[in-house]
Image (cartoon, rainbow, N blue to C red; front, top):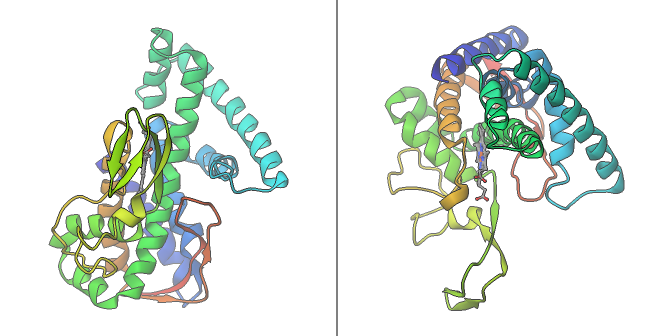
Length: 292
Ligand code: HEM
């Protein structure tokens, strides 16, 4: 995906240059944090970006209720959006079955044709892949930019030395932890930190807390882009470790350096609005001015 990510990043940064010339306030969520991962996951699945732009809003409405924190109105919208999404993907599946292409969608459809997935599993996998493919990365871009604006010394350090990019991306992932929790069911009794947890119990593991554990990460609230003391839990762990972790790393390593190089001045221009979804950290708006 590296060449596609490079191409899509360049296109979006060019768009930002056009929109921000003259000191206009731009919303980085609207113009970058959403379209960037939507374009990447659409490309990976083999969907036209124009369709992705429409689908992400449906997927966002649908996934809004996953956390359990929603109104009746949210639920009605989520139902309608899920149906529209499924109708769209049913057509795509039909198309790929008739005319396979060199894309992930065709490979998934082939797995179903071979009997390794039934039709419900195929649909669930496609819907989840599309949604997971943009949701957390959108949050990485928005929270990452804000974390850098809050730590101008670290931002300038990255601008001056791009060799720190791999550890800088890991540190942004750790510091901002977008998926704050993962749930598991115990398969046997366990004792953790003196607490006894019986078998068959639902456990909510707080990834965000683990990522700020002072025993693991000294001075954990500090953003230190050259921290080298090991793996965070932002992509969780075990059998359900994030499928898209490598892709998200490629996206972060491509986007942040391009953004901070193109715009030596990134200034907040208003209060960013938080995304009200339990378990996901992110923003729905991030107004800034961009100077070159
Ligand atoms: C910064 C970006 C991302 C973050 C922070 C993130 C975080 C996570 C976390 C914490 C989990 C594990 C949940 C658990 O343990 O139960 C997960 C699972 C998953 N993620 Fe991501 N993710 C990101 C990007 C992506 C992308 C780009 C894709 C798709 C291309 C993706 C696809 C998935 C899938 C399919 C799973 C489910 C894996 C399974 O249950 O076996 N993620 N992600």
